[in-house]
Length: 281
Ligand code: C2E
Ligand code: MG
Ligand code: MG
Ligand code: MG
View 1 (cartoon, rainbow, N blue to C red):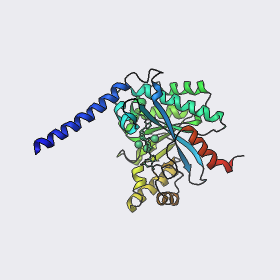
View 2 (cartoon, protein in one colour; view 1 turned 120 degrees about the horizontal axis):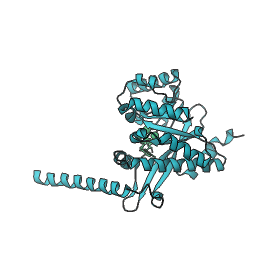
View 3 (cartoon, rainbow, N blue to C red; view 1 turned 90 degrees about the horizontal axis):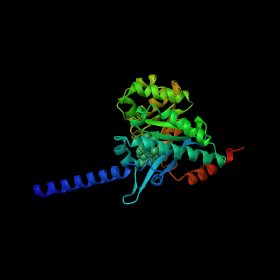
């Protein structure tokens, strides 16, 4: 009956709300406290050059291992925490972990750029660039080894501030990419005013690339970006078909499960040794 249906919905709503509250309340304070920060770890997914077939970088993706809830995906907890001030200490923790990882790569004789994701609210933080520079200095890592990914939707809400922050980061030597490009319902024209070094074509496009219209859009984005001197990375490459098509469009870089899933730093290093090995001096 309708009565039963209603109580089922209520329960579901209730348990989702409970989970959200559990996540948010256990995050409260967790990232200021070094003892609790162990629950966050970084995984690394390779970015490949289509021309050389080599790994040309990694993206750092966070994982949160919660004592009661198990491992929680960033797709679940980042959108929750992004709406609160907790995102700022979390982002700082993630930047520090990533830069420490880069310094450990260097000690293993591997100098490879690693990209870190930052959130909408982080863009509002005027001290962010300064913080990043201090961390790089602490670990003796240079700016060209750290890249920043910012989602398109966060840029659209605050274009003026985004331009200012991105310019600041670029002038300090960081590469900055627009993440999830094409999902923000924006026009291509605003690329003219954003001083970014790369765009990441959202995986929705890559997964639908068999559709001739989607393929044409992807091809046009790649060509347009090339003409204005912006690098392109296609996300979400899950099969050989998508890879071939992107290659035929001249897409410079690719990322996806077909090429490599996010994994621990040591596993990622072992992959890069295997794949890039023959080209080492
Ligand atoms: P994103 O930055 O666009 O990262 C790509 C996401 O797609 C990752 O999910 C990655 O594991 C997944 N992915 C990569 N290749 C494939 C593929 O071939 N197929 C499919 N289906 N998925 C693929 P993940 O790690 O769950 O992260 C989800 C989102 O959470 C990220 O999207 C990013 O927006 C956010 N996120 C992850 N780590 C961080 C972080 O450290 N800080 C911030 N602020 N956000 C993060
Ligand atoms: Mg990203
Ligand atoms: Mg993305
Ligand atoms: Mg995404």
